[in-house]
Length: 360
Image (cartoon, rainbow, N blue to C red):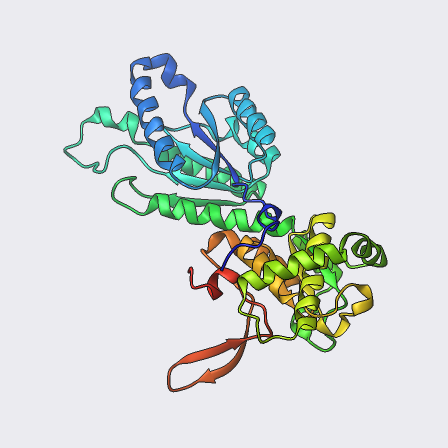
């Protein structure tokens, strides 16, 4: 299926910004400055491994004292990080850093690792200096817990464990939560009467950070101004290039084109991340001659959240989770296949276009 012109610009693919900071002890620079180059080499190794992950990185320096942690956090604030990966290259007193992180107030993923894979009776005492970061991790986590900050500890050797993958999973989860908290969800009509699972109170939406933007008379007026017959004709031509519709009545194709353009205009005007429509409330007089399923199929392929029947919570969740999967689609559970141990999923005409095209 060909991509319909004018759609790909609608969705932002901006990577989540993640901070990285290393903890160290000023006393060691004063008493054992000769070990610092080796400490820095290991930090460079950590940086290389983390930069392979699909995030935008704000790399902080090796920090030892409160002023240095304050500067690192100021950098993270400028870069808009949603989480910080923290590594202890040695012991570091928690009071040097905890106040700065309390001010930043984002989740912290502690990468608890060391250069050495083995440490036993045969290990040289010199290796203690390079491999005792866990001592600082304990101190740091104590302070984080007391201050109520969200943190995760992922431990393991860089080369022989899944620690980097586990750090990545934590960060992806944090990124999804951050998207959910900023989601702007358009609502056409009202939630389907009687469907209690997504009849959520406004207080819950506020706690989650979701903003619901209703379709109003202003949007109807805007649609009448912008969705012209010329644009509808162009949209019909594009739809016919994508879909085998030779046997479909022309009035249905025109309705799909008009509704799709109306939805696209509304999403752009209101800067929406997700949308939900209750088909019972669709009205030709307000720009909805039919459910805009063709446009919805495209939107889900591009990362816009969607759910049917006025379910703004699921629509927001779809937007939040879209970057975590190669593809997602809105659907509902309908019929169980007891013999095949499967569940038949269905809805109206909405499905991720890339899934329909067999790309995934």
